[in-house]
Length: 516
Image (cartoon, rainbow, N blue to C red):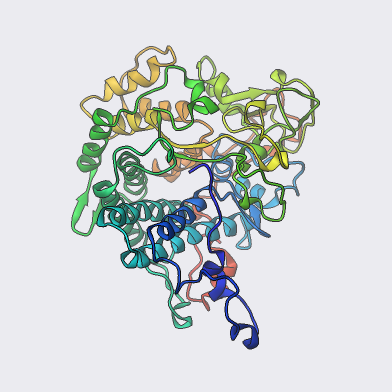
């Protein structure tokens, strides 16, 4: 869905607006309100686009920039916080150093984004049965909403753990104070939603609707959810009585691998080029681009640009190949070393020695930047404010990830799947042990937002050993050694703080996460 348009924001915020009684007595100036909308198939399509639209949100107006891939990689051992100086991205720097405050604005931005998506999915699920449309149309819309709600909840629960589970919209002020649910309850609801999506989503989508999700995307996302949940909590998922265990998840993945027509691209680097958008390796992808061309700094989410690419790009001027990124999430020398001799490093990391133009060396300058989501010339927008119009889509789940998940879950084809991923880039076969598969994930999927959560699901001791950084100063580092020291705080178990504003709004019902 490349051309996203904004639908009915008043419906989403009206109940939270602070207005005078006189204002509330007025008739709405817009002819489309809740009572007159959700009538036709076209209405439902617009509402569905509004749910999809939240996938592309990478900031919350007036709060913070918070692209998923940037935040996740800063939390990992693959990146530092970066930015112009220590104050430029203070909230992101808190996450990098594992000393986030309960008022952290990045955490608040993530929280609000995901509940916006959940609200919109819930609202459409409540209204869809009243729409004048075929049963087949309604079933597909319900399945898409279920997938999207599961996606938003998965992002929310793996960042915050202790969150309220809402499967309906709040109907009155008496329902404002919600309690937090257990992680088990949230993850099981995610499983319910994804099983429903698998049962009703199509296997293919029309060529002019490439952003819509398929059955295969739901199967792959369920596998990712299972691996994280089972790794962190040691439990199986339960979808209303249907146990989702290792064998069931592997069954879904084997079906995807055998029947979906997804496959590896011949060239690894093409995965991050415009030529491969929604290509055969992309199982689930979020659209970004320059349509509509966007100018408004006060409301960046009104456009479709990839803000992660802007934030992570090097601060280069006077170049035909790079364009004034903000140098957040500079890549660690550790990752650069770990990829020594790996053919994928060239497509993953760009060194300052490869840049032309004038490079400004900013905070926590390591000399290395992401080459996957960045401010290179291929992804410049066609117009508007150039920082707000980066055109690279985010590949959420690639087919190589699917092969590695199946191998990790113990597929009888594990060796074949691992070999396929490695041979694509000319690497020899290695035994399909769990350690080798996890190492392959680290190199194959580096700087795509997965590393931190892969570490957490291996255990806090593994996360601590990998993330803790002291003294590993690379040859291109500029700041004092202390600026690069990171100490993972195991008492927080890897989760972000529940935003203090949300605790206050709950009238003290919410309990803060451990360690904060």
